[in-house]
Length: 127
Length: 150
Image 1 (cartoon, each protein chain N blue to C red):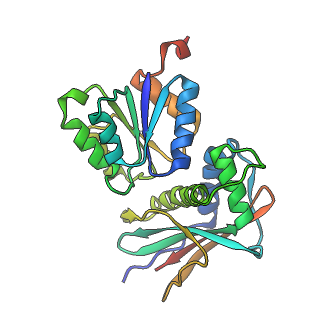
Image 2 (image 1 turned 45 degrees about the horizontal axis):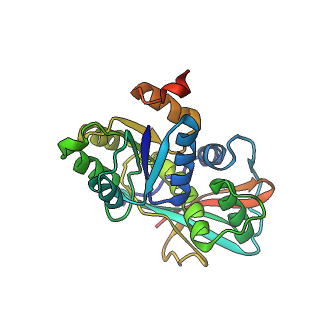
Image 3 (image 1 turned 30 degrees about the vertical axis):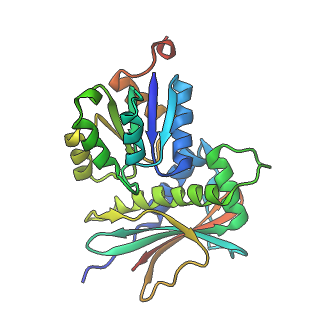
């Protein structure tokens, strides 16, 4: 399975990518929503996108809206991974099309739990 | 005019401990409170600003060598590997971002959080008032968190 990790912090991208790799994902990274869209528009396909909210150029919510507007990307599962913990913001992200919401800081187990809820833990990892 | 009410010291400590346990150390116990701030010999600052009905700043201060160690821990680098300036700014700034974001969540009125900034000296805060200060020790190295109304 493939995941796209979108965060303006390289440190955070590395942390999330490392956890996903341990779960069994192949990962790619983007530093903002625009870079993520560029990868998708270039034909890259992912099962999961982990999306920070507060980013320059194009923020996470704008990315969720842009992805949801394209039928060809409807199978992409989007999980917000962010410090934005206000209830209203969480509702906005979910209403815009995000599937799950994880608040920083998080543990590897927290990411795994969310992926299990989404049915996105690779089968060999589940065994 | 609204004012930024003091956070409870225990809340700031709890947030910082959770951030370090989850992101930096992978386990709790490496960030502990100090009775008073220790003097920093070569300070570096990371901060985010919170803007709601009142504006505030969460500022983390530590020595440059500690910030380098923090970046190495966050990035999973060996202890003897040099940290580049971009990685230092990115990693230290992200710690401030997550601490500040969680502090913002404690505000009665939510608002926006700026992107993190890292620098020295910290820009002058004209008219700012210190609301809280928490002195911490990370792996025996001093680290302070202050919250300002700006």
